Image 1 (cartoon, rainbow, N blue to C red):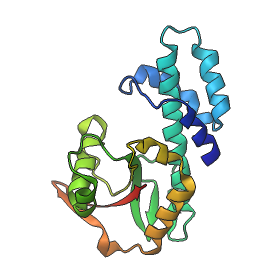
Image 2 (cartoon, rainbow, N blue to C red):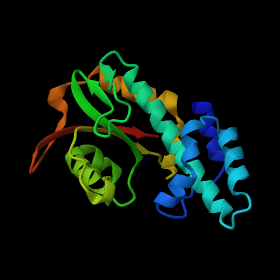
Image 3 (cartoon, one colour):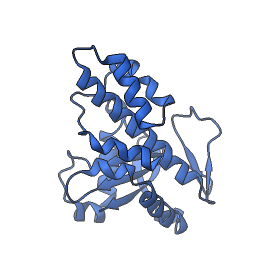
Amino acid sequence: MEIQLKKRWSSEYKWGRKQADIWDLQTNFIYSISEFDEVNKEIYNRFSTHKKFQELRNYGLNRWYNFWSAQAVEFIFTSHPLVRQVKNAMDREKDLFINGIAFDHKMSVYPKGYNVGLKDAQIQLKELAKWLYINQSSQQRIHLKNRLFVVLYKNDGEHWRLKAELGWIKLLVDEYLDSFSKKNLIELSHTKGVVKCDIIFGVR
């Protein structure tokens, strides 16, 4: 999968628009095609005559890249002996259990909208966690469940490329899980209780 994801690097990573239901429906075939050349061919076959072909191609390839990277990282997590995958693959609230604690996992690049430098963010994890809960929730509704964030930062600004570095991400995840402790989790209070979360940084 790492080899397939890195083939995406040859084209510019550009969305051109926010994610939208109509374009999502048109590109949902990306969920069933794991090979880059095949998904690229499918995009061409479906949209080559469309007046917005290049936008649709970028959109489809970006969705493909993010989905298959996330799938691979979930596999990395669930391959660790501390982790158990949820039985229901359609569960929207959790992906896995670590020592019996349920978590949803979210991998993202260092957010442009977070106006705090990397070094400060790595120290002030709780503040970044609050920001991620609020700003990465669907329709700005806070995801009030336990979550593990994998946040990627590349010094040249090309953070998105790190989503393909699966061997390196596995080292980060395994190191985190090998020393996992419930007492080290970040706790965020809200009107309905407390969520437990944590942030795994990947910096290159």
